[in-house]
Image (cartoon, rainbow, N blue to C red):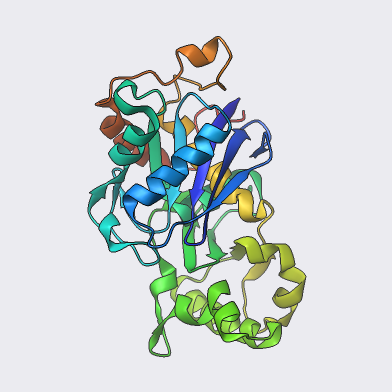
Length: 297
């Protein structure tokens, strides 16, 4: 089964159809730069460009770098402040489908999406206890799981560490902006992990984001953490996969299909008012254990 996922980040917006049977991209992802300022309208245009690139018809899952509740974006640390309090589900669904709502959008926090993918298909699969997935990029995203159950919108990148938001010191952007060596940056990440470990006592840290492709450069330098630390297996595609999982879970009775197929003609064709109810539906899916409804079974 294929479902479309889009990952909205502070520096780039990328997406692709996802094969939920494998937990991997069905086609090579397409990426555009995040506009600056990252206003809702500007980002919505970019999301449309990514989805249109594949000629996709059907439901779309999308991530957002901030707190999302019932399709409304509540915070906006690394994007324009115009997102705060916005019915982003409705905005994106309208931009992708207009009145026909042929491509309804299900929105969730970006790190939660990455975490769900890693817990279902990747480094956290079948791991009991407390698992924390951290995405290191423009900021630091977090997804906390207890026995496979997600605690949504934890936003642990904004924990205070030595008088600063942790992500201002230990994100990949901080490394790049300050020209830090791998060793110096790893020391900062170590301090951050020690702080999170003190608060949550996880059995496992999964480190995601684009930097996970270079895990051998910094993970061996991190010392003194009791929990196991591993790189994300889905690396920087985890958000796309998790977004597709959420879109499928919100509409488990309506499996989407790519444009051009007979199934695509009817997939996701709901009245425009369905966007809000779909967004609410994903809350129950996100709050459930990682055994998502028939996705990839």
